[in-house]
Amino acid sequence: MIGTLLVMGDGAASLRLVDVTSALEAALTALKAVGADPMYRVGGTSAALLQGVHLPVGDVDVLVARREDVDTVAAALSSFPCLYAASWFPESSQYFARYEVNGVQLEISTVEHETDSDEMECIGRGPWQHYVLITCGSHRVPVVRLELRLATELLRDRSDRYEPLLDHMATQGFDADLLDRAMAARGLSVERQRLVHDRLASSPDRP
Image (cartoon, rainbow, N blue to C red; front, side, top):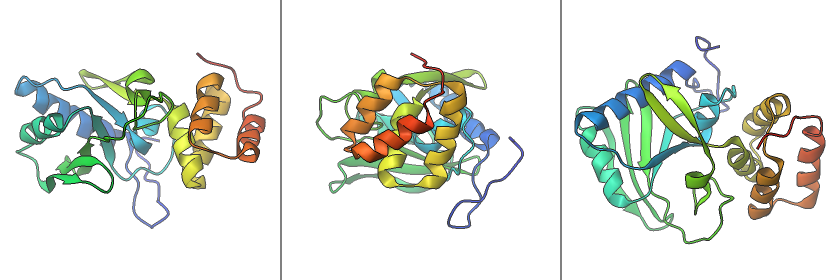
């Protein structure tokens, strides 16, 4: 599967697992070379791909805790093409930059919404508390758990993303309590939550 290109809904080619791991390994190696070690999480569809879910992926999303961390990563990636210089977006409360690393668009961002929730993919304690470590070359990369990603895709109603997530979780298992809380936090309807439960009814429960 690593060598197979998927086609996204807009006709663009989806990133392969090797593309994502190559970009992350290069970026993390550049950070290590300058002695930087910011706290971060990989989210979005690339996080799902890294966990074995075959779905369309357009870029690599890296969440950091502070604006100065965006600047730190940007400085470390200065030898790579800068596609969007670090900037503040008040409408989305994000400090954001985009680089091209080994042919892959890598986006670094804060998401600065106040909440006590631990059930959302990019906001609050969720990404920092609910993650798994995936090996990318010589690095161990913290990626946001699939339960939080599934709730995001269900909210967006992107079936080409949530169907592969459901298929994967049905066979590999999931944390039922975390998924229930994530769906509730996203305001998904009772009917939608019931459909998800029915789809995953025979799946092994995984803490």
